[in-house]
Image (cartoon, rainbow, N blue to C red; front, side, top):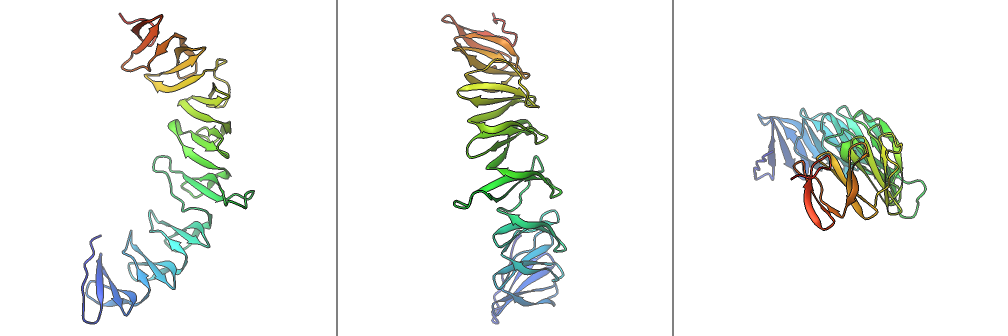
Length: 289
């Protein structure tokens, strides 16, 4: 919001904010209305611009909020505060973060290592607390909170990360696993790499081989691969025994691994090489003349 400064001989300056104006006098901040009437005598060490109807205030290095009428809805008692958004604000106390509503009521007790930020696409938040088993390096363990501020996955992983098809990649001390969209652990965090290949298909790497499981964590194929790629035109390039082929979204080897070289499908065709000859195939494995 644009701010207009006025320099007066009394060392008073104001900042226009909606119909209110921030007052600054003798090192303190207050508030007046559009007519210049003082509605809050300067008493704070700092006052931020209004955001969504509320302004952050500071007094004696503690923070709170006032509303547009100048009413103090949250006394300055927090070590840090974030602006209100959708009726809630992150607050920090003793190096732990929580959430309050616009009445000042605590809706999430300050106990988390970071401010709670909800993912735009999933509506979920990565939350972190101190790892109770690690007292030397101060590591955190992570879980998930929904938009109702309910913890739907208790913190226990080194990290959580949303990936394709609404799956969640988790790790435990640099070993990776995967949760399905229902937050069920279908691949435990003990592998070098793991990735969803399709909505119902997941691959994980163990001792140099890629294994396939379905959305429930049950094996999707008896075949293992030395190379695995993401889906392109509904097929994923794979390799075994030094040959290349393609699997479909269920894990079925739709085009048998027999090619010496292969590129991923693009525009319904893939370039392959067999016995020194290069040509294109369709999604059924037929050569395109």
